[in-house]
Image 1 (cartoon, helix red, strand yellow):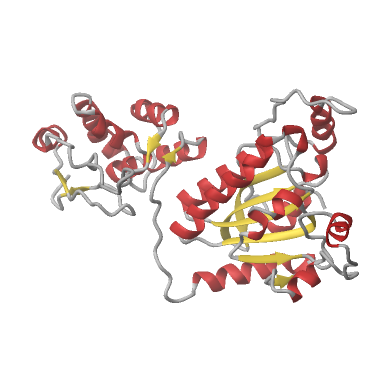
Image 2 (cartoon, helix red, strand yellow; image 1 turned 60 degrees about the horizontal axis):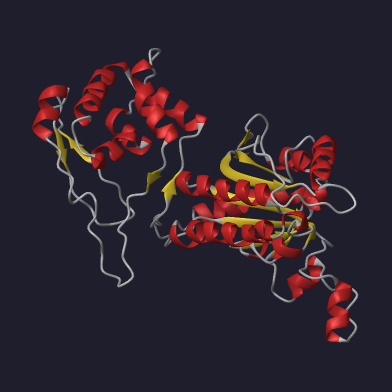
Length: 373
């Protein structure tokens, strides 16, 4: 199966939304063997209709929103280059911010040799993103191994799943069978590096036939959702990337006509404040808290300026950093000085700082009085 067929097999109809589908590979090493690397890329793109060996996006699986990445073995053997690593990392970061369950369907021959060390770096980059996703945000990652899953993919994110599923008789391993036999100087079992062999030795959680995979994933996610004693996660550090078009559209749809004047007044008042308050204002999460309502509005011209700022700038996640001596640095919110009286008089609402919370899992918020208009 190619990646598109797997997506159609897993995702509910008309719910698939691709991410970063225009991201294209380059040739940083100007690599050439029997054929230039650029020519191999063009052949793969013409053959599959994809820019590289993975498709990423979001969709519904039996009505459950998920973030899904599917590797395509038909594109240069599903090898992992810079674009594959970048797209998967961006998908993990997006799933972390949106709180989505992550599913990666692996089918790869390993790291792409034509990109050298750049392809090997993707193993660490993806693994570091998964560490935040799994250990800090406490979200569910399911890895689905198909035939073949080998090399650097097996040595990194394919085996890092909270749950690892595999298809029957799938070839799963790191080095080739012949290399291992010559290194160990002994014969290997006939079923070596098959999913059944790995399940017997405790490296897999479940072998699922392809026709039952969607149902198995749906029931697993539902069980996880209803599990007791779950712990709320947090994002301790990092960078919030510029806004996606999808997030911009969310902002436009939730802003009500009654709130636009107040928001515009706050925007004008913030121009005289320091950069810290400006940083808070351009964060789309804070925009939600300030102006979010259920109705929509046709005239969104007043939102163009903050949306442009948020789309062009990277915003540091508000965290409590430490230096090399583990001495906490001053939290930037502690030095924040906002003339709340000016904002209240200008907007007609009482914007009083609620707290300067040191908890990295929370955001700086404003408390609006119940009597506000």
